Length: 314
Image (spheres, rainbow, N blue to C red):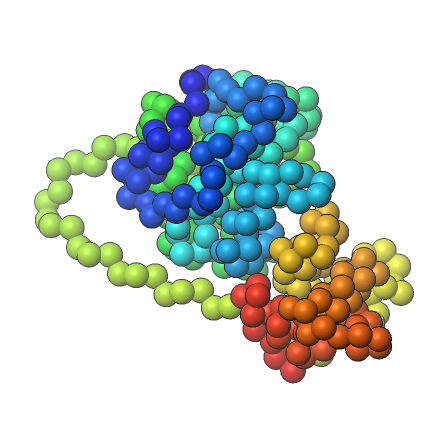
């Protein structure tokens, strides 16, 4: 239990931990404090964004969307390991979670109970970091990004005198959530714990770390995407016929043409309608008539890929 850090103290704590921090717009006054109390704080929640591209993800987390107003977290950690501060105070990131989990985090228990209830306001009690990743189990987590998650969580724990047991994933807090997907929170807590434990005196001079190789851009197969767009609306249920659909849907969410809850990997009627709106937009090519029927074409998809950070193959 602790009083929330001021904006200056939060910024200082992150930079003291060796992080590159970008202050996004008016992050110091961007919050949801008018909707409820902020604090006392008990821990840190780690999320993934289900989006691609640093700029798009940061802007989404700063503003939110129609069904969930921003800010959606305190900081966005991109794939290069840069922390973008987007909120200070109460933010819409944790929602209702399990009160038993909160009590375990507060006590820094060695293990967490199963999160099977949604009865406690997590936005009041937790800092939140959204990490840029599609969350599909295939989008990579670069070493620089994982290290930045470790450092950011450790910075807040160090500022409050907490251990690594004060850091949890969204999937450990709110029933039905899967984020962060792609690494385990136990492994991340181990990393944070080692960072918070003082090292013995070094026996040899430190070496200069090598810069990580930038992650390859996701690739969308146009022919497979077209097949999904033509077959999925008629299919029963919501089959995921081509994983690349999630990449395109995430880009449409970022561009404001598709609601985030509809990002399900199924190129159904809602996605067809959203893609048609993209085709008709100036950025999407300004198409009209049958050329804007919601079935992806190479030009409009390439334009979307340039905006969202993916490439297109025939």
